[in-house]
Image (cartoon, rainbow, N blue to C red; front, side, top):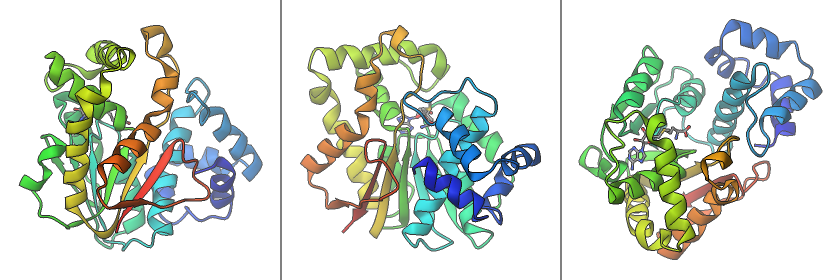
Length: 286
Ligand SMILES: C[S@@+](CC[C@H](N)C(=O)[O-])C[C@H]1O[C@@H](n2cnc3c(N)ncnc32)[C@H](O)[C@@H]1O
């Protein structure tokens, strides 16, 4: 969502009733003191390419940006308040459950994530404890979700900054790197370098297309007709020094767009005017 629109919506009080409850009283107070222009400027300092987390309150602003952007898509698409959302590879990031928690506003709603890494799953469990919305964590590959839930049972499939994690996990599987038991951040440089090496030698598609499309096809079968598959993928600062190309990372949404189109799965792209399609992709199951 562009930061102009977000700052305007915040100033209009749109998020007061529900979304703002997801933040600490101190963060709400400080954001509330900013005019729409000031908030837009502060958001622009963080929501840049690459994402800049060096400034004051930048983590809170990033979280606000993502939870509000997802909340806004749920609203724009007219999802029922008791919608069910499946996220692949949440790690320990809780923006989507928070967005759904706010959107459902106590009227039901179910959130499920398939998340492989042990330690991140444990952190995620702690962070979502006591949420009003029903949260379930399945420690398995997203490709196996139909072992747990039946076809056409979810309104939304969410991929928040997960395309890279999914491709890294696929390549790690080939390379024999354990992404379940290791600390994710310890092995991250190895994961990134492995993906870069497949990309640089022109072997990435041969290695990753089929398992990636298998996950998307499975998620598509999980999705109700008329439901949405939603992706975001930003670029963070600080990865070039690990030999990981920001240009490559910044093209992830387009790579997924091309591969999913090629696989012809019956998904059509919905244009969202205030969402940049380089960083966002919303697909509807026809
Ligand atoms: C670093 S976290 C990413 C969190 C979040 N997507 C973000 O970037 O804000 C990566 C997580 O994705 C999980 N993951 C990657 N591929 C997966 C798959 N196919 N099924 C389930 N989890 C997966 C990893 O195991 C790990 O827990």
